Length: 144
Ligand SMILES: [Zn+2]
Image 1 (cartoon, helix red, strand yellow):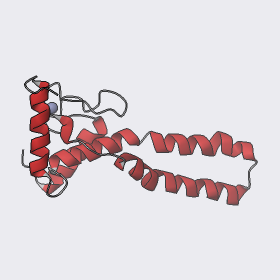
Image 2 (cartoon, helix red, strand yellow; image 1 turned 135 degrees about the horizontal axis):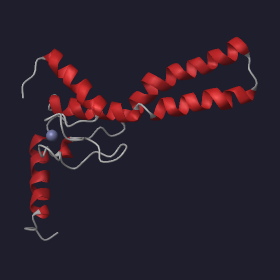
Image 3 (tube, protein in one colour; image 1 turned 120 degrees about the horizontal axis):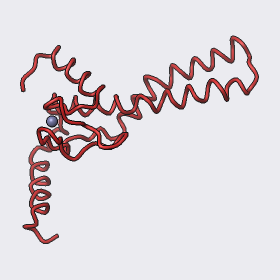
Image 4 (spheres, protein in one colour; image 1 turned 45 degrees about the vertical axis):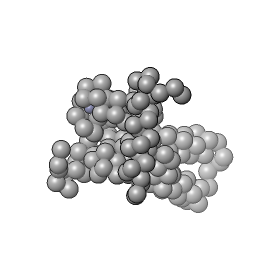
């Protein structure tokens, strides 16, 4: 699947937002809220390449938490509300604002990894060896 750059971005955004397989666009990427599937149930894409690590949390903090934090500070400075206003307004906004974007951000990162064939530089051979060994263990040919 070779896509032009604009098409790549659109595909990454679409499949990541909807949590769909970045290869076929039909299977589900997640088997739970933030848990990536082992394989696509439609095309069999192996998700072992997917390693967004703490990327979703980082981007959620940078893109969502900081602007929301400034909103909360502005609310305090502009209106000087009593503390219960922050309990009712600020805390839920910050909590949901940081947690809800985690899944689409994780979907975008995984889709981006797949579409751009990203991999840690210089680890192609090690990656192949590790997964060949895993595959052999899975088939029961190796005594673990
Ligand atoms: Zn698929």
